[in-house]
Length: 496
Image (cartoon, rainbow, N blue to C red; front, side):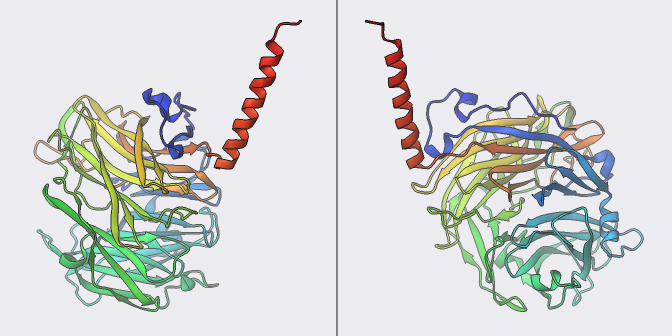
């Protein structure tokens, strides 16, 4: 299952033949692990909602229809259906009820795993449930305790979709878009769920003290609102949503859950400084089929992690969205942005695009030393949906951000056509996930989708960076190198 690739040990400059870059980007990297995750045949559902996390010495993939636990070298340790996972955690699912819209987070501050889903049926005739679970210890192979919460107890005609998950030092947070039941569902509100972490971590885990804020105005706070994962932070819990234009300017809505975790209040939304606006993404072409790939929209898809703070970084929040490629209206691109939570501003943003590929379903992680990895999928009329990573660097002392390497992780072997036809794009995504390794500050793991075999497949990849020495160390190494050169020069002198 472990399939390390021939691009191991390539340096940042070697891939593109470029000259020197900033100090934070000068370290080499390796594709340290690169192995197959779940696929359509093991899941039975589409799209996969590609999600996973790393912690406790294990890798956990948590996707629609399938849960897999792997060693960090790619050996499959355990697998089950998603329904079995929730059943084993103590959640009763009725007939014709299925879990989906999955998220999982490893909280390194308490060495526990937290997972969430919602439930769905076809058709959706009433309330569904928001599901949350916590592991008993640092191993995802052990016992989990799961709980189900009615998504809208005050309105039987609403159901929750696309829940997002965030964890801080005091709570676990789930936000969801709320839709009406019936043949043409509409949405104008979100629900915001907060659960005290102390209740979930108790000797007998519970959801005691949870609060569900219903009917939150989505026209104010946004859709697909992402709570931040910052395990060392307490209340307030900051949340972001992307308000996108059709090519003018965009802005980010910031909301906060303030006050006590047992009695939180939702703040008024603040509008962050605008970024360059791009049009919403289009459905992307793929090889071997006239059916296009659904690139969803320009919401925040991947989970939001606050960058670990170091001596020069206050802990920025990074995110990436899918937009239409302004240079080729048939393709999509990725817009990244760096949010400063202290000043409530977007400090920088940029576009990653390619004249021959359509980019979509991006997610991002940034190491304490400023190494950036964006995992995503890409395709074109001559390329099957494939998994890629973009490698970049961020120097917190100057604010400089550079993306230097487009790295193929695995090539797709066939198109993805599930749910698609001549007029409807195939379902894909709806997101990918990229996370830091809690045991290695110089490693990033990314979970992405590609096409092949019976339909969709997922790939789990670890990108490891060579640590950059401190300036004093560099000076010592330089002096040592000069001394060595002097000794060598003396040895080469002719006798006399």
